[in-house]
Image 1: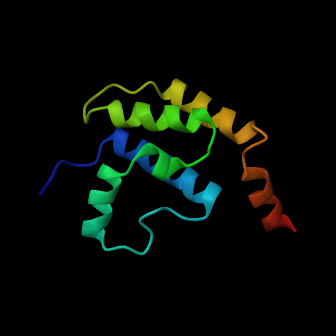
Image 2: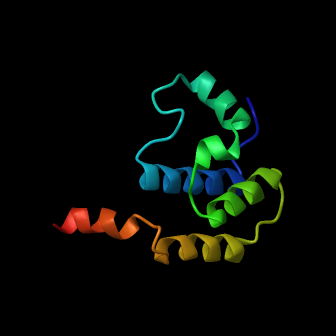
Length: 101
């Protein structure tokens, strides 16, 4: 059995959730779990993120640079995600409007 999940894994989950909300899918949706793990490791930032704001690339690069037991700068991640949610390029408002309409 591998290592238990770390806070870095949790932040990757938040990141992937953001991408799925903002694009409607992820490149590995519908694939076998064994293939998903390889694709997550090998995918290029451009293929994963596409034409999203530079902040999305910064978050991804920061996550990729972290190791299992690194201390996380949660404030940095919170600031980056908040800036995405309040930017004009965020679909968050449209998504929530669709639930209330």
